[in-house]
Amino acid sequence: MRREKRIVARNSVLAALVVTGLKLAVGLATASLGILSEAAHSALDLVAAVITLFSVRVSDRPADADHQYGHGKVENFSAFIETGLLLLTCVWIVYEAVRRLFYHHVEIEPSAAAFAVLGLSMIVDVWRSRALKRIASRYDSQALYADALHFGTDVFSSGVVMLGLALVLAGRWWNIAWMSSADPVAALFVAGVVVYVSSRLARQTIDALLDAAPQGARGRILREIRSIEGILEIERVRIRRAGNGYFADVSVGLARNLTFQKAEQLTEEVRQAVRRILPQADVVVHSLARPGQKENVFDRIRAVATRNNLNLHDVSVQHVGGRLHVEQHVELDEKLTLKAAHDEVTRIEGQMRAEVPEISSILTHIESEPATIESGRDITGDGAWLTRVRAAAKEFPEVLDIHDVVAKRVRERIYLSCHCSMPDNLSLFRVHDIITALEARLKHQSPQLFRVLIHPEPQTDNRR
Image 1 (cartoon, one colour):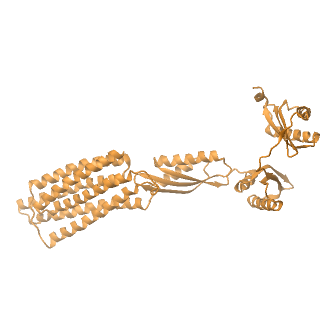
Image 2: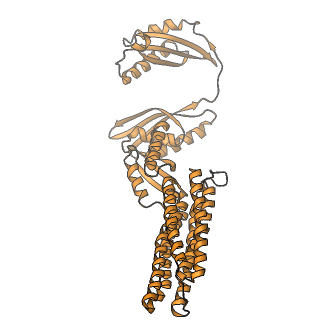
Image 3: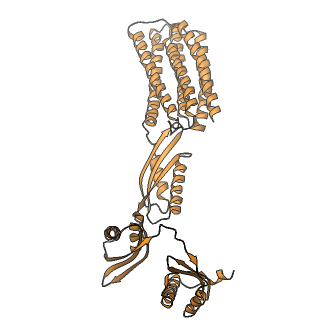
């Protein structure tokens, strides 16, 4: 890409140099304002081509610490400078044309050389305009497109000047006096063409420099994002252009109870939706936590805990006497004092009531969140724990097998854990009830137990 852009820009400079020199020589020889205006126009095209070559070299540099969005704006600035140069050309052409029409008549000498130079200029302009436009379209280069637009209009303006010279020559042959003014009139027409081209370039370059979004792109991006399932709202879509690249900043609302992985999947879908409209765009997607449309009371309670970076479990909600009563367990830093922990829970409960106004009461069991790795020893074989667990499990016909029983003593407390097999099709609700009852039975039989943890497994998994 860089090589093709630089080659076509360099060829444009060489062509502009040759055409400008020929037009200037013939314009001075014939005293034709039309040809001189074309020479001035081509001279500025030469300057513009040099600026374009420079901007293409700079704009292709990768982003660095000082230019984190790359150097693409150089192309836009280059096109802006070209616009200013074209407008200066128009001022001189209009001034000289008015002076020759009304104040100082100048005799011109149309010659075969003048027509030959203008014809050659038109051929060169057609060639380089097409070459520039092809590369500009392929790599979306605004600087090269500006040059292509310049040289495309040069073909037309050169034709007008050639027509003006032909009318002057015809006026002499047929002795028609008013035709002698055809040359400055043609120059005015060239100035009009240049103003038109400049206005188009000015609008494009100013839009790019002021970070205007491409026309219609924002609306199409909004439609693409809204079609993604899971996007609750679109808060912001901003687009800016730098050279041939686009940068998009999108903020979307996602359900606050989504996992990080699901949220990342949705943001990637948003990123791809933007790139379907603006290929190769650099897209940054901000995800905003929002209440989901299908949230229940449990989701809303857990959302408050998540927002405060707290671990919440064993949440139970009862509907009694037309009111909702919540019971829950929350884990807090074990280094907190009771007063500090109670104050924190009171604050969280207040947020939960604000989030779910229909809650009548909240009862929170405060647990310490472990932050210390404790040392202990294995006592599995000391008290025939396997026999005790299997004896207790016989009371529950759904428990098909007990294995991997481990007992540990930590700080004079006994921790007991085991695995049990149950039927594959047993509901999770029933599994939880059985495990809870079995844990209670074990603690009743062995009061010295501090904690019992039972891991349920499907029967087929245990057969492997």
